[in-house]
Image (cartoon, rainbow, N blue to C red):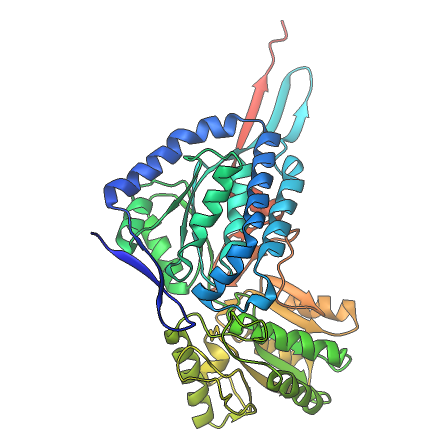
Length: 460
């Protein structure tokens, strides 16, 4: 037997699932089948591809009662939240809705002499490497538009959510998507590198850590294979003096703590105008103290374990270092905190950007809150980060939010909301958050390439 991938459940540390990785030969055969199937898939009418993707999405929805507890076992999200199908369907449906217009030829001009236009054609074989924290929604961001645009897709999921790729592919095959058009794989890092370096794929989409994104780019170096990445984040919230305070507290704290803080666009640092700081803090502490930490299979649990003990250890280390440097904790240790994957959510004040908890990605249920006295101070602090995914601005003044948004180094500017992915907008980032963009019309553009037609007519 070769290398075996094991999903260790955060509920009790047991092995929930395991799969053997493909051999190098078998992995290359998958890529070859995908390439052989691509032309025929792209030749199908666009509407047929759209209909098959919609049917695949519906088939995933039909599995939801099995999927929700399965996710709780694999990565710890409480069953009370019902899984990811709402966002999964919303994103795929939007991309299906806009496909005809997004993929339409760009007409440059036609007269008696020439016809000129630009066509969007598929990249070819798209490799999707999806993360564990929102394994269905992050995967569909690329899978749906890639298939609709005429690409074939090879999907590789994180070990922590080992069964998700199988689920999605099973559903799409049952709906009529050909087996070689959409394939799930279990791969070692070495074979993944070799596939990319050998130009087995025409486009790679990776969601995960900065280190993982760097590994993808190193593998693709010199191949001219396109690589799109969504990597780390340290997303800020800024509560201005005219904010709706109750709405700001409720949304920002939920954005910091939901899914045990394991959200790509979760709120990891909050800056509050000094006139609202004390009241904001008191309300935030009250919310978090009301959480119930526990087994995610229990319907009363509102915050489950982190997906892996090593993730929780990283958050504990950041908190401990911050406290040693003068930070103040506001949440007493929950009785269910076991020192392992079950971690007390924490609010910190008296924090500074000298502390790792305010600089490095935490990806856990901890948030630092700082007092600010002006927009300029808040902008400087929000930009003092190596990451740039989203920023959440709280004010009653749309023009003020737009002006501040123009000065923030980020991929998405939210006003009076947070931790949401609007499929009509491009999901993108800057700095160490990565490059490229998914969803929206731009998502289709990144999964296709432009092909120009300059057709001279015979006039005599």
